[in-house]
Length: 293
Image (cartoon, rainbow, N blue to C red; front, top):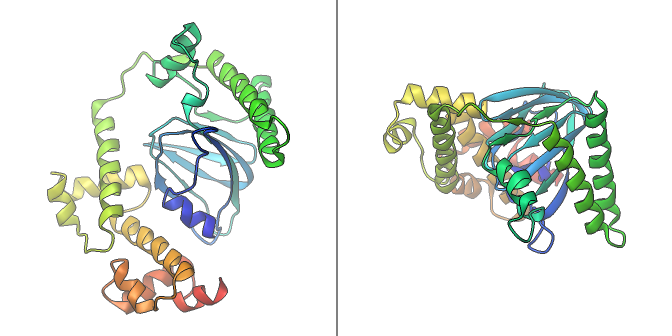
């Protein structure tokens, strides 16, 4: 559960400057429909479902996932995950900066096989249900990376990087050239959704209204609500409350502040309403949550 809230806040470390790669093991809470809140990051993410089933939403696209399904998420794409209540949905994710694979000089490898992907001239398959041999090879390589990262034996970094190059090669030779420019309106929706999420994260302690967001981003309330939900699979109000509850859960865990103070710190001016929303998402009271951690 605690890992989940860190993920919502986009605070999971994705390696460091010397080795910009991390393998995350994520066990989602099946008591929630929302498993991973809408977020994005500069790094590339390749995830593999290890248990159960659910859906991933990338920008305005959705894919049904089951065990061994692979998803390639390019940098800076909005993504979230949902699952049927009561059904497990776990995965591991290899997250890395593309610069980790870049050539030292701007050689043909850099220009043709890396820059073209970054410029979106080459489109890697986003969803892979490993049935073909090359798809199964990618799954095996990802499982090997996971094991190598966990054991951290001598020269494990070199082994992981070598396997990533093979994965990149397999994705590249099964990629497609982008001939259609994405609609500017879709790009606009994605960027505005990102801006709204950033605004919520910066101002969650204060009152945030649809009217305020509508005026700030110069969009009608109805239109804002429609495309925000199409991108995040949550209404604006649901996202605000969900994010506030995730922050308050961290405060309950990491501080000795009383429940009323934490409610006020996370934008809930009414303790009864805070308790109601906390119970909706956590299926227990704030006090019960604090007692169990």
